Amino acid sequence: MKSNIRIFRKKILRFYKENGRHGLPWRKTHNPYKILVSEIMLQQTQVDRVIPKYKAFLEAFPTVQKLANAKLSHVLLLWSGLGYNRRARMLHDAAKQVVFEHSGHFPKDITELLKLPGVGSYTARAIVTFAYNEPVVMIETNIRSVFIHEFFGNVIAVDDTKIVPLIEASSVKERDSRRWYAALMDYGSYLKKEYPNPSRKSKHHSKQSKFRGSLREVRGDVLKILLNGNRTVKDLVKESGFTSEKIEEALGGLCSDGLTQKTKRGWGVI
Image 1 (cartoon, rainbow, N blue to C red):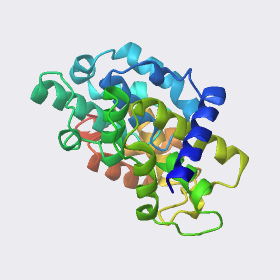
Image 2: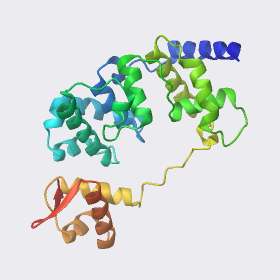
Image 3: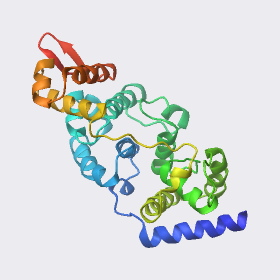
C-alpha cells in the first residue's frame, strides 16, 4: 500500500506541476475570509462562473468587517447569478459572527469554524488547509473522483469510509497541504472532462435536478425582481411570467430562508 501511495502522489503532483490551475484567484491568498468566500461560492457552481463573481464580491467587500456591516440586499445583489441565494445570507451571517464574536479574527480550530453559519465539515477543513496549511483529511466531489478513479476501478457504490483511509495515508503527513489538495482537486476536475464522471460511482452521488422550470428558477427570478424594490404577488406574476401558485411557493421558501419579508408595500428583500 505504501508503495502504491508513493506512486500515486508522484503522479498527482507531476500533473499539478504541469497542468494545475495555478492562476485561480483564491489560490493566491492565505486570507481565511477570502478562502471562505471562494468555498461558499464554489458550492454547486462551476469555477468559470465563480471567478468574476468572486473578484467583484471582494472588490465590494474586501474584508470580513466590510461584509458584516453591509446590508443583506447589497450582498444579494452582488451574489445575483450564482444561484442558491441562501448561501449569500449564510456567508453574511458568518461574517457578522466572526466580527462580533471573534473580534474579526477567523478561528483556526475546526470545531469553532463549524459553528459559523454555512460552514460544514468540508468547508471548515478547506479553510484550515488553504489558510493555515494544516494537514487535515477532507473530501469533496473532485477529491472523491480522484480516489475512485485511481483505486477502485470498476467498483460501484463506493462508500466514503473506503476512501477516507486512502486520503489520510496520502495526505496527513503532507508538509504542503495547500499544494496537495489543490493538486487533487485539479486532477479530479481533469478526470471529469476526460472520463465519465468517476464520482457517479460513489455511494453518496446524487444528480442535480434540472434548473429550467424548477422552483429554484422561480425563486431566483423572484429575488432578482425584489432587489429592484417591493412588489405584490400580482406584480411578480406579471413581471416573471410564473403562476401565482409558483410565486407564492417561492416566496414562502425565500421567507423561510431569511431572504424576503412581507410588508405593507408588498414583498421585499430583508
